[in-house]
Length: 134
Length: 133
Ligand SMILES: Nc1ncnc2c1ncn2[C@@H]1O[C@H](COP(=O)(O)OP(=O)(O)OP(=O)(O)O)[C@@H](O)[C@H]1O
Ligand SMILES: [Mg+2]
Image (cartoon, rainbow over all chains, first blue to last red; front, side, top):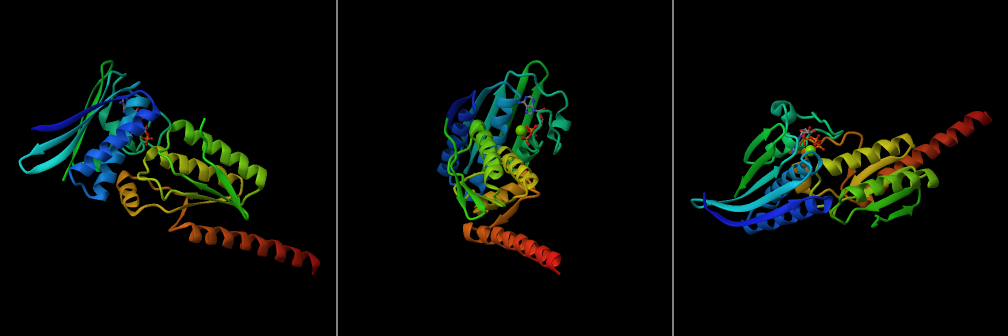
């Protein structure tokens, strides 16, 4: 899948999470997503960036503008070298949290995206990829 | 450190969230509001989020916490000005915001709080009347 544009952003602080949101918003506007779809992908990005920070001990976000035929989309990848997730099904279930949260981030990000993919290995880290298409 | 200003209007406190919230700012706001409700005896808290482009689970939790603490201190929380795109997204995210009242705009939010203030005045009046009978 051709990638038109890539940003790599560090996630080390709450301010970095804000920057990730802003970059995702800019790209979502560029590919012409509706306001509702922009809001959905930015919200999903916020959830995943915060998980990277809070549970992954920090990491990186990759924000890409991708093309597939005439379709354009934004694809986001969040990657950390943190403790990993021992039970993915559990982590994805609504209201499951190990950090005193609402337990909505992962499941919510999945619902807010057109594509969702998660890989995690205990002791190695976690990578979540989502996409939203125009 | 930056803080979000809290205004007092009648028996209510008004907070306008204009910036992209991050952790420290959210925690500071929770603390400041709690202290201010206690010191002013405010019966209502109005949180204007019309400037917020998204509400994620982090902001949702902050609003929930503020509402829970306010309730304990006998104040109502009304969130006003949620953008339509934000409201649609919240539903899909799964945020329920139970215990939080919402109103379309500041005027309607204030009206909601005022009706609560009037109610409690009525109660006080009828309690007094009962005592005088
Ligand atoms: N990058 C990650 N590394 C390690 N564990 C993670 C990671 N992301 C999520 N988790 C685990 O999955 C759980 C569920 O995550 P989710 O985002 O759904 O909820 P939460 O972060 O606990 O609360 P909320 O997002 O609603 O504030 C987390 O509590 C945590 O245990
Ligand atoms: Mg989360």
